[in-house]
Image 1 (cartoon, rainbow, N blue to C red):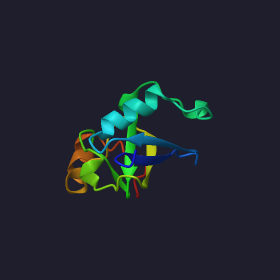
Image 2 (cartoon, rainbow, N blue to C red):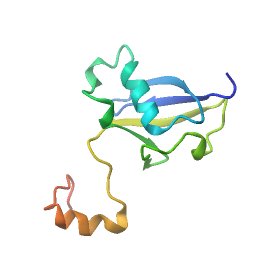
Image 3 (cartoon, rainbow, N blue to C red):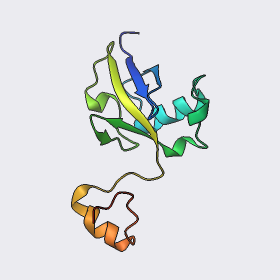
Length: 112
């Protein structure tokens, strides 16, 4: 048990649920597990696929292959992450402007 990482996931709505994961589990593994074991009480937030579940840790989106161990999360302690439904990850900021121009400015929150 103490080798596992307790992950408290927070939805945009503020609902939380804790799950146990191995340090070898990746962000994709976490998303799949949560999708397959969707908590009671989260029905309003249910998504159609694990592929759109994204984890945010310390203000950054985690890419799918990042393991919990690579984040230096302490086993036996509780780490907090946000869980959001999002089709794509945001572009790294150094490419962001160029890619947004190519994509035809689909950003939700453009400052004019």
